[in-house]
Image 1: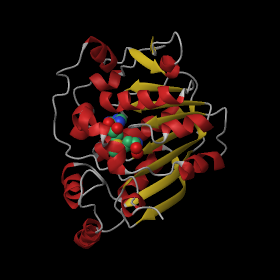
Image 2 (image 1 turned 90 degrees about the vertical axis):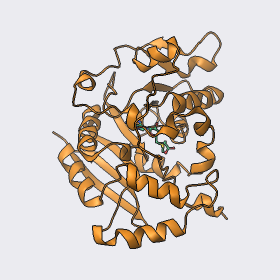
Image 3 (image 1 turned 90 degrees about the horizontal axis):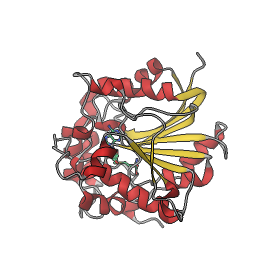
Image 4 (image 1 turned 60 degrees about the horizontal axis):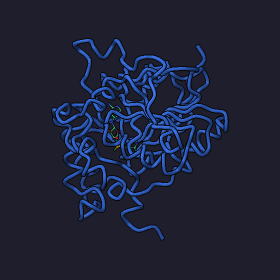
Length: 297
Ligand SMILES: C[S@@+](CC[C@H](N)C(=O)[O-])C[C@H]1O[C@@H](n2cnc3c(N)ncnc32)[C@H](O)[C@@H]1O
């Protein structure tokens, strides 16, 4: 039997969405990475490969320099930027089986030659098994600490078809052929709804027509008047030890400071971005799993 704290989905609360000065403390390489001038490849673990190579084209997206654009790093969630917290991340969120998500992509035609982008990839809980199944996986995350953990795991696994890009939903520039699939789990809620819609539009733009988006997140499938009652049930099932899982305090902080949205707002955003929702499952009216196909133009 799965331990109780592992039965919960990898809801991955992202803590306070407070503003954080994250530039401090970066070395020259870190700064270069933050500027998106380099991309790491899994060759780091192979003889002769230091893992760093210049990107084919600059990471920087013109949009992100606009004064109205969201500072994604400042909204990434402080614990995702903190190396010590990242060390405990997998234990806290549990180890959800990537199998159903891989199968959902495979059911719509993705296979050994497919290109998949994982946005907000974290420590690679999806990206690493995905690289074992699909042709090329690009793991994208705005947090240098998360990417460092992911790189370490990828190098240990010796995966040559997994690369890591330091960027966010709004800043990532997809290079090369369009993706066949995009995956994102428990990351889109970091950004407000206006920017979610923009992120979904950008995701549609990196997918080929007919490409698949598998989206999992904390999404609220209830009316505003049902919030207290729904949250009370959620909190009652929370972990007691914050090292072992998300506590009621973590959940409350998530609701207060992050941007989980309602199902009845998210689904129109997906439609406007050009997606057809082909399946949706909800758990406890709090966790949504969507499989969407990019409509033909
Ligand atoms: C709760 S973790 C989930 C990680 C991974 N998807 C998983 O399910 O194991 C959220 C991740 O989103 C990343 N993140 C936060 N804001 C982001 C943004 N604007 N763009 C891309 N990644 C972001 C965080 O750094 C963190 O790694």
